Length: 514
Image (cartoon, one colour):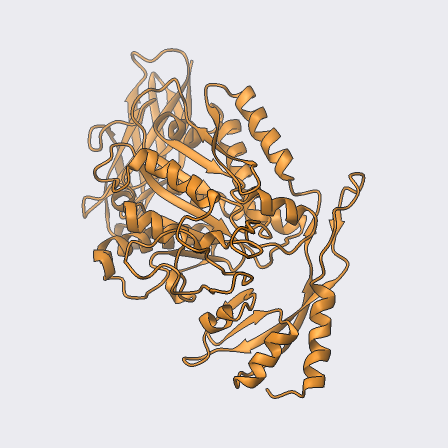
């Protein structure tokens, strides 16, 4: 759409009014809400007008759809669009930055983590994995039953990479609460922490988070060393394929929101994640060669309601010999999406980017890696945040359930709806095995373990009963003697196998022995 210079500046004025810099509100104010709104423009994209071109011009792309994007625009960007023959129009007004009482400050996140570690010393350990550009501690919390000394596969969950995306840190903190409050009370959480090690980094970009607390529309970190106003941390990780880093979805303009920095891992925040993972995996390690290594990495962002996996820079899944692994990551991502109802897709199908967390974690370490884009805004309301937390609990639990063998277990049936009762000296367990999201293969076996998950195929066998969906959904019953079991609460861990031989994600239920 062509506009006169005068019209362009008139439109841009509304953008400038909505993109002002906000200062911190007094401490007595419990809810901070930006008064100004932000004008978003709809910009048509096609094979010759791409997202990468927009980002190279420093356009702050908020939302990507198949044939258009939405973004706020500066007067200079409007001039460029007009001069380059782009079609655009004003789309809508949206709320500017907010930071209400649902959200924790960086200081309160640190305090909460330390409080958890004090209250749950056998389950939680706070680890400082690095320092931000401004010298703030980057803290992770390692959650596992430390009294169970067997080797454990590990997962890593990251929030707060982009500062204005204020809901992912809260989702991360909800995961911490779920695990620590759930141990001993929730059967699934209990067996998982007995056998898995979960690492959570709630706020990676702590310096930027403080900007967000002040209602500043901050995406990047605050490193000004490179003649810039910061570096996009999710463009600063390395790429395993030579020549790819900095090539896609980035800009050499230091003031662009997608400025990747002068080189891969130039930033202390990305170095902290690298050092943590490398300390377990080694510089060239893989889950196949590192016993009990990191078997899953999930980097949570907003917004878009998407679940994505590598590659992020190319749609050619065969690159770097990745086709088989990417097919398996697609299975896991699709299962995540079955829980949170988001759209699952290869990262590059959104638009091409390089230097992404997941490209590095998979490319260098072969770790199954995922980006989850939650919600429909950078600044969700209290009610929206509560919904995001609820809908992303399923992917978190499922990801940790399959952690010992992600590519294998995602192909097998889930065990759901478990109940356990004690009758005449015997434990009766009922439930359903469901392969509906795992291949739709016929269920052929169910087994039960008491207190500790054993080797697959060695548990007490259950009896398959009513089946539907050509046998992919099957009710079952298992019975075992209470002989030898002490009085009190015991864990019953159930897993199911389909006709291809794949064992699915285990689930658990408590039983009380009188």
